[in-house]
Length: 249
Image 1 (cartoon, one colour):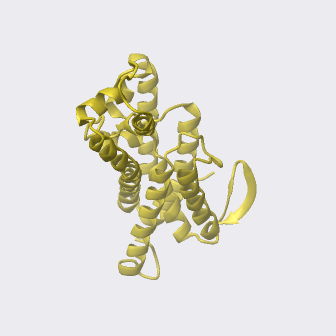
Image 2: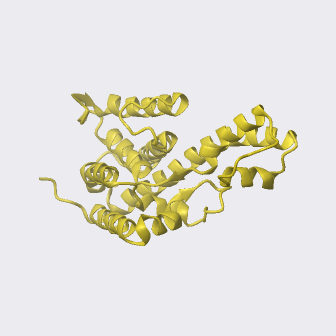
Image 3: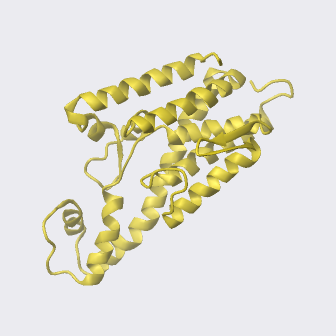
């Protein structure tokens, strides 16, 4: 059995403690509202959520799969890179995930918001409509449709270490391209150099089409893409500029 490395062990502990706290304090809502990442236009958004959401999870299956992947791939990457470089990739990938997911949200949000402003609805009225459960009167069918599209973006929240782990997975693949990996739901061994780009492509397709392949439908697919690409580019830069031919350190 693979010996767990120190940084991975500490990350596992933090994630598990945060999960237990979330499930037991404030009926599962208090810590979630504080530490999950909300859309920046939402009043629930706080700057610290950019970091804290990486240690939050939405359910038992969510944390189970993420922590299993962290143990399996994170341990291998930390052994090869060392704790400091591993942690740098882990956090950077989480930030890359935030950048991609929020960028994707804003790409869809801003044009609709601009059109609603141009149609005569003020910004404060838009926010009120997106946060109120009251019936909306005096708006056109087009405006209603635009608000309906804005609603899931404005009220979106993001939790989980998936973006961080996708960056770690990308780093693992770059250092071990011939390693054979497989999905639990598709037990066919595939070399890492094909497996990881394939996962990224599926996430992009899922984000653009809404079609879920192996993840729940509420998955932040672009966060996965952002995390993986961040891990890839960090490793590419290090390999090109810093690593000697004998070791990745």
